[in-house]
Amino acid sequence: MTPTITAFERSPDRGRGLARDMRVRWALEEVGQAYDVRLVSFAAMKQPDHLARNPFGQIPTFQEGDLILFETGAIVLHIAETHEGLLPADPAARARAIAWLFAALNTIEPPILERQAALLLERDRPWTRERMPLIEERVRARLAQLSVRLGDADWLDGGFSAGDLLTVAVLRRLKGSGLLEEHPNIAAYVARGEARPAFKRAFDAQLAVFTARQASLSST
Ligand code: GTB
Image 1 (cartoon, rainbow, N blue to C red):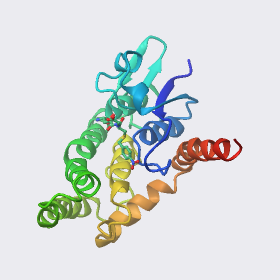
Image 2 (cartoon, helix red, strand yellow):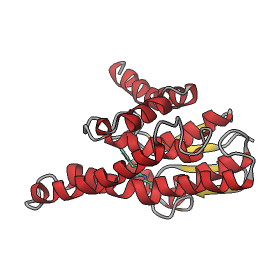
Image 3 (cartoon, helix red, strand yellow):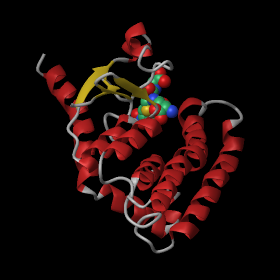
Image 4 (cartoon, helix red, strand yellow):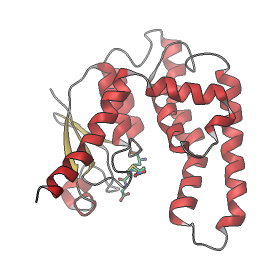
């Protein structure tokens, strides 16, 4: 059965791979699972139909038959558990890959989100200038720890896994900040993730939503 995911009809980043449906698209591309996409407006995300899928009125959601999921981590884990390719077969290695999936979302992403919220939502607040160095220190601390663990390995624990997929996706939010480049092994790790054919297909599919919209606007 072909799953259907939801994504932004109009993404603030113009489809440049930052909205979280990118993570789900990437996972589906990695495992070779075709999928349909239902685009939703910000207003539609707050209507009962979408709230029944995601009580927080957010994207992405995932529907496969009767199963409806929200939360990117849960969706990626479900895809990884129901297809070959994103989790190792060995139970211990599998558990460690799942630990990285949680680490990406619960340990690495929070300070990165805090930085993004300060930049995007609180830029004009009087405390932001003073807070920014503190926030960036928290991000730097996580990156330094991650850099030590990664060392000169290609991926975090053996072969590429759902844990790497989410870690790379989370780190991409720092692109352009200069913070990734402070650790050449992390910058190379992100580049390695982005070079995967499945990443490129997912990125192009998300970008195509924006370019198709632009084309239809300019033809009217
Ligand atoms: N914990 C949830 C998950 O992982 O699924 C968080 C989902 C979430 O934050 N969804 C966002 C959303 O629906 C889109 S991804 N927001 C609308 C709302 O809450 O009303 C966050 C996002 C959006 C846009 C960019 N961008 O354009 O750069 C980056 C990230």
